[in-house]
Length: 231
Image 1: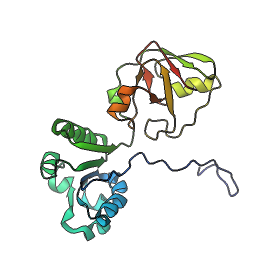
Image 2: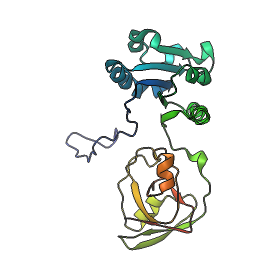
Image 3: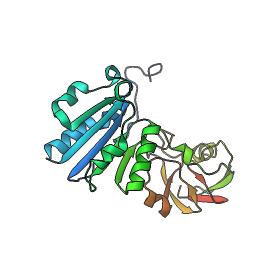
Image 4: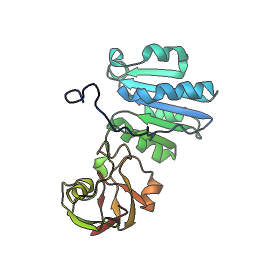
């Protein structure tokens, strides 16, 4: 954009997508790591105005690298600021133990923090909502070649290891709207007609993955020899 856009250039812009919606609950625990604090500024303002119970646990490398501290100080002891160079890693177990069992847990930040949140919340059967900066590719099971079939377009093509479904379809003249191409935005979500997808995105819930009705074809692959898509 910096090198090519000029005054008068025309752009195609989509409607905003909210892949990290705020659910309505009586209590919340927000866990932020570094720049992961960003989505929580508006969330805590909303829940505070609604009179809900909430707490924010905010970690970062050092206090002088942590954004919005001036804004957050107005919320008093509802906010716990825990720079790593002062207090070490966030004590997630303690924070969860001090939070009501029915509370919604929200977490945003680097992958190790989110992985730890998932582990703690799974074992404690807590309601967790996370937003990742990139796709959770460590969950990938295989990179075997498979055939993709674009049902409406009449295209059949081989997706080799290292290729994405989106790229292969584009090579054969089938274009699907995309944005992030990393499994985080949901733009390329496509209906699955036949076959078993291997989900590598960070958007679908566990229940949605089990249903296998849609997949993000920018990062997803197939566990079956072929997969048929509604494109």
